[in-house]
Length: 248
Image (tube, rainbow, N blue to C red; front, side):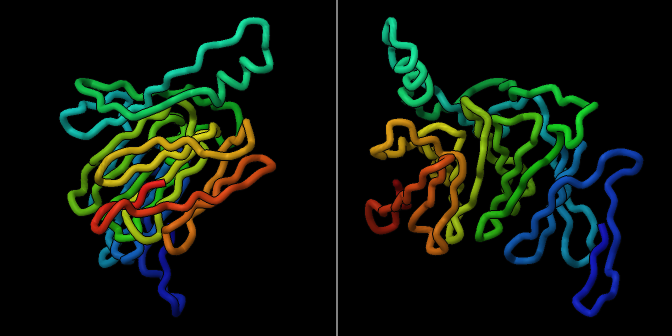
């Protein structure tokens, strides 16, 4: 990676390693103090804006001790199937599901998939990462761990939270105004994390099969645009009271 000033001077060059697939994703912190680099070796390097040197390196291990971080896992409860109605059962399997988050204890395995090395763009390494609006947190997603979101505390230079979803994650976005993360997995639910905890919310729409495949925040942070393959809806967030965080 080459870093230039606005007048064209090369300020620094950076390479974490040689002779292998390298950088896959990059994110600036909103304060411009940190540059996060995600690579194919499943690690994040955080660079400072003064010396452009690495100040911390975060790995994404296949097992994690819950004594070190808070591990939230999505627990699903599926609706009973109807005998003889395959079409209705298919809808129930996908949309007739209740879910909530539970906190795990002990050593937690992180589900992984084996990448196919012979294919272009293998599902391996840090495919996405971004800072929260206040630069306090950084999320990352390791592509060969498709159901996991890693949340790091930038001030402490350590991991704070691991989110484990029941299905592969399709889209992740930070609230533009506060440290609140929204994500979707292709079902009829929106998932949110904030320092206060996790939330799973079913999208109340007239469509019987609304799949949230993408989402985007309004610049005010008061609403979410939810997109399926051929439909859309807007989710408005309302605060419950003064000093409390908004909820769908």
